[in-house]
Image 1 (tube, rainbow, N blue to C red):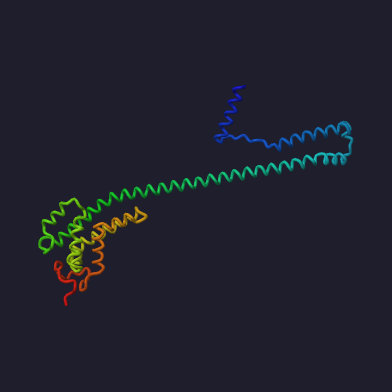
Image 2 (spheres, one colour):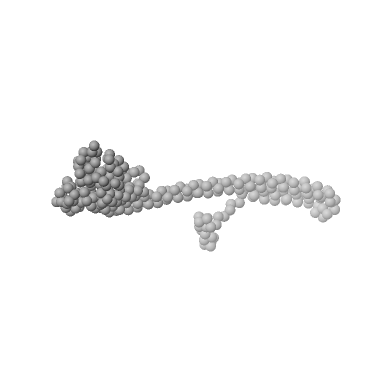
Length: 279
């Protein structure tokens, strides 16, 4: 076998595989038309040779010759018309199949793109959660410091507070960002709602600390919403000790005791009078 022919056939297969060259298969109907046409022309030539003679063909009247040729080639014309029709049908079927395959390929591409988009979205959400967890530790410490200053403002020396200085120093030395939160919750529930309001909003300094706490905690809740679609992280943040202090602060601010107006400091911020206003 000729090596060059093997190489050519191998190259043809390679090109077919890669799509660079695809040899087109000749339809069997074309071969059939060629064979029938050849046989018909051969029979026609024999007929002319035997019946008329090639030398006498030029003596035949033109109208007779035209009718003869018309009748002779009409079957061939009809044959090729039918073959062309079926060939076009085959081409249309191939084109339809090619379009269907392209449609399937586009659907697979869309599905792949959707999978990739979902994976990217999941990765982005995971990155947001990781960033939130790192930010959460920093913000919790910040919130703990704000509440520490609030405790010092309300319970420090000269305020007549209920927390000894030794206890405040102990809370500062603890490696616990929610130590002051627990202390403030205890004080706010232990001495009634009027004292709880004064504890958080009783002076300009305490109001400033509480406002800073509310502002920072609101931003922490917003960050939790941005990285958690089902709300679990937000619920965990809101359910922490800082979260309960936040709720207690907001309840006191939005529902000041009778006789007290928010932002007006015309009362003793450290007194522990009854929840009922003075008559």
